[in-house]
Length: 489
Ligand code: BG6
Image (cartoon, protein in one colour):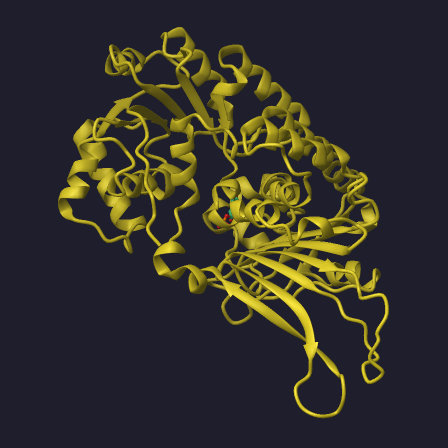
């Protein structure tokens, strides 16, 4: 398999927050990989903009360190690194004041190329940055802005943010990142659904018993306790990443793979979601790892609040009220410090209606599981005859396709989500970005759940680090005579 790299047009990418964690961890190492792959044209420039008092050389040193730290397993030549660093500039800038803006304007003046502004800063600065770009004449029809999550913390704040950005930029210029949409395997969901005849006729409540979406992480809140404790799993993961997965698995086939066709269909799914009943949700908070408390403290210690009521785990059941899905429950689950890092979507089909084999009393069901990370691949559970004598006894076996095995190491080579998404920004392709109305609809569904917890002073249930979550989550399934897939790597 030979990967095809199509270079993008010349661009200037300004990264506000260019010295920050996301820029050093993801954005700059990702750009470097695209540079080495030959996708970033030699004339492209990346301009770090932040408060730190650095010069361009200082910034290049900082980026070289970041690449060494966060791209350590990426093979490259020294002159490739030098070539990339030469494309970097730096401007010390004050998002709220006027300092540095004239320098940035001068740098960008007289170039007739794509200008992209990445707002890798706190959302509280989005409005200021957009206003300054406008004031200094940098918000023209050819420019685009990239904004990170969290996009608001509820419907009201998301609306305000959308309205603020809309004062300065058209919707077609705003790229709201949900990095899950940039994952290779998440796009594979669409390929599997709409590139095969096999699944689509069965993809409805007549044949599907239920669907499970699990995004389990082994990491805890780490150094992000302050942010996380104000968010919790519902805001941090469900409102965005899990919601996007749910949309892709449940939406109607869009007429074309283009931004509005895809996003219109996703929006319809979110708008058709039923409100979640309080007894259809389980919330949890991880406890310290026994004998390893110093390294793996419990959630409350990690966030420094012994009374914190923020959830690090949530599991819930919801329904989509439309013709395709009425009657098929969707179970969503995500948590930190779980047994394994594993993101998986499982489509559990209904049982066969009748068994023709006298020796086999059981009913059988097919289970399609799409593993997003790690070991990306697809497994279809099928029923076959148990080998040997003894009549027609049946057994369920997996038809397993791990993409790395099927495509070879090169074909299965993963482009990091950020790399792909940044290149899409330059190409002007919004298909894998969230539209403003989608984000608002997701909050409109999420808000009542969170408000319900607040009104009831709900306290999340403790669960063991390294487990599959609190017992309430299992109870949620048991009541429906179903069970979660085991969380395993
Ligand atoms: C981020 C969340 O958006 O996604 C984090 O803020 C979470 O809390 C992360 O750990 C998970 O992303 P990935 O790509 O590691 O699955």
